[in-house]
Amino acid sequence: MSKRNNETGVIHSYVNLSHLDSDVKNLILESVKAMDHAYTPYSNFKVGAAVLCGSGTIYSGCNVENASFGLSICAERTTLVKAISSGDKDFKTIAVCAEGTGDPATPCGACRQFIVEFATNRDIIIYLTNPKMDRIRQTTIYQLLPDHFVLN
Image (cartoon, rainbow, N blue to C red):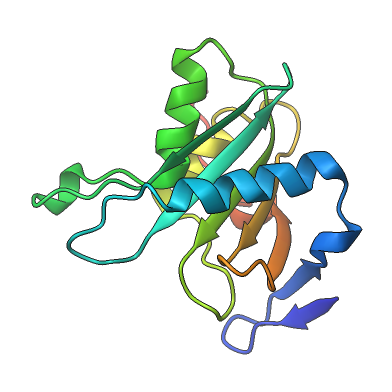
């Protein structure tokens, strides 16, 4: 199913959980579980993320806020840093779950740039959802950040 965003005019592609393969379902479920560990005493906006690497390993993480807001870290970056520090940099698919029941939240600009750094010569599929998993948007990092910064 596709839906046009009335503010941006961008068409979003939504998928049904039952139509996804078991690896993707599991990845989305891991992002939902990770959200439960979020430390968000200031915004109460919990986010969980999970990444499936080429090795077949799934890493997950959550957002962690800090009283000095600039030191807070998003779930997407927490997750990818976990994978990188374990030696896994071949990101295949990412799932992000954020609180709310409307359209799923997208990664912030910093997370988009962080993700695209590892999308060398290929796109990375990203699934965005809410805790109920009744709205699952499928997108890619190149769709979210089409004209990304590259250091030449």
